[in-house]
Length: 91
Image (cartoon, rainbow, N blue to C red):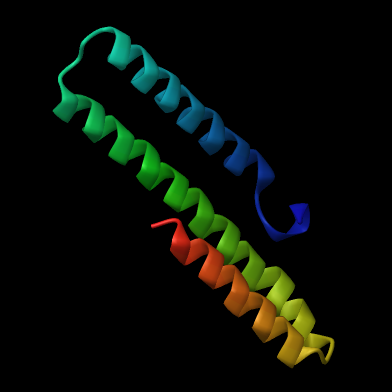
């Protein structure tokens, strides 16, 4: 899997998202207005979606290409369709 994507970039993004989640948790205790909390929740959700996009793109560019080049197109396409299905549930 590491060969499919820039792991350092993904780790950085996920750490940032963890920081956003921690900030949201603190906002709840600080009696921050609901709208402001929802804005931050949406920002974290969008950031997670971007992480998913990066992983899906890496999967396509490496795993799917490799599977097709090695003659296992049917299985590779089925697995890619399943990956897209999982990713689309995130939204």
